[in-house]
Length: 616
Image 1 (cartoon, rainbow, N blue to C red):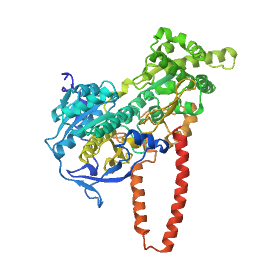
Image 2: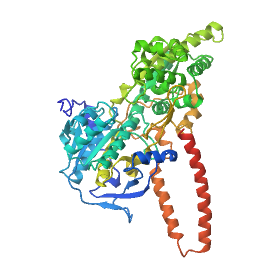
Image 3: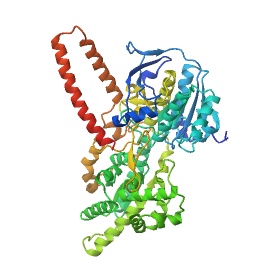
Image 4: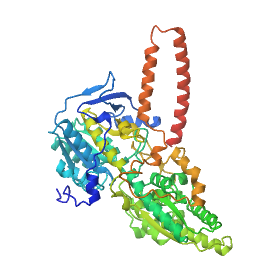
C-alpha cells in the first residue's frame, strides 16, 4: 500500500469544522433492524431490447425493486432482518473524482459498525488497479477522521475506470475470494455501474458469494433515470461553477468590452451547463442536446452566437457570457463524424502525422478548415470508453475564433457597425471537482453508504443504491435499491459512412430532456437572459444559513419519486385484486373490465411512442 493513502490530512479551520458535521439519515435507515419490502419484477427501460438484456444477464435480470422501511411501517409482507453477522466488505472508487465520494465510504463504514462492530471495511487503494492487485487499506474511524465531509478521492485514490476484460474480471473475482468479501461496493458513474452489473452477473454465474453494489457518484449528473434522481457531486460542482460564472458575469458588466466563452465539464450530456445557467443567468448557453435535435452545424452555431452579439450591440452592449458544455464537440455532426474517422485510423495504428493523408475527402477539407490548435487536439487518442478527450478539446476557443472571424466579416461588409468583438476563454473543469462537498452532497453520499449496507444485509446482488424524494428534507427521503439491469438500454449508432452497429446492454448517459421542466424554465427565460443582463450570483458554497439547504434547479422543478409512485400503483392494483375476485357482483366485474381495457390500450400506445422516440 502506498503510504500517501489514508494518512491524516492537514486541515484548515473550515475543513475541521466541516469534519465535525454529522450528516442526517432518514428514519428508514435508523436502528439495527433492516426492513425491506420487495416490489414486482423489473424489466429493461427499452422493451425492444429487453430480450437482449435478459440474455446477457440471465442471473441478475428481472430482479424486484427493494424499498427500505421505517420501524413503524405496517407492511405485512416486509422482510425483517434482525441478525447481523460480521461482514467483510470492499469498496473502490471506480469513476472520476466527485465531491462527496468520501462520505459514501463513511456512511458504509458507520452502518457496518452499527450493526456489528466486528465487521470490516477494506478500501482498495489506487482505484480499480488496486482491486486487481489486492492492495487494500482497512477503513477505521481514525482513518476516516480527516476525510469526513471532505472533497477529492485521496483517501484511496483512483486509476482507470473500467472492469471489463476477462483478465480484469478474473482479477476482481480473485481479490474478492482471497479477502473473503461478502460485498463489493463500486462508486462511480454510468461506465462503472455497467461494469458493476457485469461483475455481479459473472459472480452469480460462477457461484462467487460476493455481492456487488453500485453507487451513483458522478459530477456529470448523467446517471439519471426513473430510479436515480441525482448523482453525488453534481450539486457541488454546479454551485461552485455558478459562483465562478457569476463572478465573470459581474466582471463583464463592469468592463463592458469582453465576451467570455466558458466551457464546463460534464462529458457529452449538458446537465452541468443547464444547471449553471439556471443558477447564474449568463447571456447564452449552447446545449449539446439542442444541437443534436436541430442538427446544427459548426457554422449554424457560429451564426447563432454572432447574431446574438449583433443584437446586443444594437442595444450598445459589447459584453456577454456564453456557456459551452465540454461534450458539444461530439454533438456537432460534422465534428463528431471527423472524430470517428480519426479514432478509427488510430485503431488501425496510424500515427498522428499520417492520419490527415488517410481521411476521406470531406473530412480532410473540414480538418484543413479548422485552426491548428483544434486539429492537434482532435488527434488525441480516445478515452477508455472510446469517447474523445473532451477536457482537452478547447471548443470555447474554436467558437470564439469563428465568431470573431464572422463579426470582422460583417464589419467589413458593413452589416455590423458596432465595436470590435473581443473574447476571453475559460475552461471550468478541474477547479470544482476537488471542492468541499455541499451540505446536500454530504448528506446524500452518507445516506447512500448506509443503503449499501442494507442492500448487502438483504442479500441483493447487482443493485444500485437509490434515494427518491430528494427535493424534500432528509427525514422525508425514501431509500431503496434497483437492479442495474433495469436501467440498461441498447444504443444504436453509426460509425463511418454506411456502418451501423448495435451496442451491448449498458447503463447509458442520460441527456438533457428537451421536454423536461428544467429545460422549459430555461427556454422561458432565454430571451431575457440574452438581452437584459439578468446576472445572478448565488455566492460561494454555503454550509450554514441562507442557501445551505438550496437544491439544484434541475432536481427541484422536476416531478420525480418514480419508485414511490410505482409502489403507490402496486397498492392500487392490490386493492383492485381485493375487490374484483370470484363472487364479486356483475356490475363490479363489468366496470373493472371496461376500465382495465381502456387503461391497457392507452398505456400500450404511450409505451410504444415513448420507446420509439427515446431509443433510436
